[in-house]
Length: 558
Image 1 (cartoon, rainbow, N blue to C red):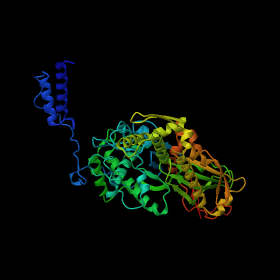
Image 2: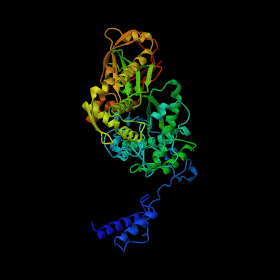
Image 3: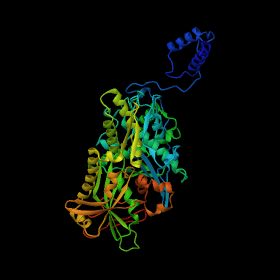
Image 4: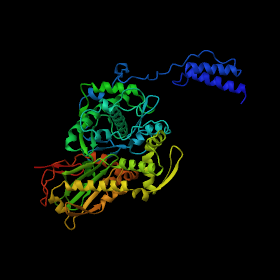
């Protein structure tokens, strides 16, 4: 390249920098150096003073630890609060905020079932929405699919995408998620705006809510203010009240944020704006609480959809919902007086148990398996960067391994490797995880009265296992559905059953394919749900009222 060409190209670069005023593109000293370089190369006509800049929206200034006074003032959209507190009586939506993916489903009673393709509503495809947020160096938060796309190629940056954010609720027992102990690290949030786990949860739930309501718009005239249930893990009694209160409040506040930022999610939203809006929402004297119906334990939601097609006079079902963060168990019994009757469903409340290990645990095990195989040192900077990049990609790598039986990978330092599924499953840590899942199954059954176990162990009785959730195809989860299991001296035969209800035969094939992932949202949108404390604690050969017809018709009792 000759000097004249180089001078022309450098002059063009300088002109673009000064015209666009790109933040961080070049300092005043760097621009002066460029001018001198252009002149030295013979470009005497290079601009020596900036051209008038195009007036662009101001970029967010770095904000100190607590900058509420400096935050922009956002005009909240309060229509959900200001309108009359009523919802359509025949429409119900269920929001399933998942650890890895979020899903939704809706019903118009008595017999319309509305599949909500959240991926399509978000501009991509499919029914599920990634539960991910990424805060980029432009101080914008990106959501769902965009969060994943924007975080690619940053293996050497030390940056972290916010995945598995639902786990923040599961890992805390009480108190607020807005305290100093819950402030996001700089690797997660480089903006300088003080952002807590509670802030980020509200913001993601607002995005999730807005996308779900956008998908519902295809089916109902006024989708924004319909009643909605939310699915939740099987929290222990010590946590259930706190967890439910937190979820109800955050979902109500999320509706205000969803209305405020509706239509603006694509392309990211300035963190300072989001933070300012959240702070204002926290201070509202009133929230749209009327929109939020009960929280439904995930196995209970599955039972409402899966057990409705029971054909025997009495059947036992163990529902196992395997998500990314938790594995939830629940024992249900369906009974009918004759073949013509609708089955009535009873839940043994003592069996509702949760194991805080699921698909994410397998992600971690695979990450560790690869790290050990490639001798990655997590204590040095190079190893940390390799592991950070591997963590961002581990879910997709896991899917390839379990679908094809072989995984060929390339790490961020160009290390190439290959592992076989049988070798991974034979790893002692993976075997211990499989045993932990089996022990969780036993614990759920072991919590019920001996009389129930005696019945389940009788000749001819089968414990039907309903496996659902995005991680249910994993081999150690599928193993729960078959074979003998011994619980407190009782030998019980398990039999895996298809969890999808019969009405789904008329649904699109692609929905049937992903039913295990959507089962919680589908069941949670049923008109009535099996309730806790409904089955007798001691099995007496029959069941007593109150009873609940599975699906969505009758509620009765004495």
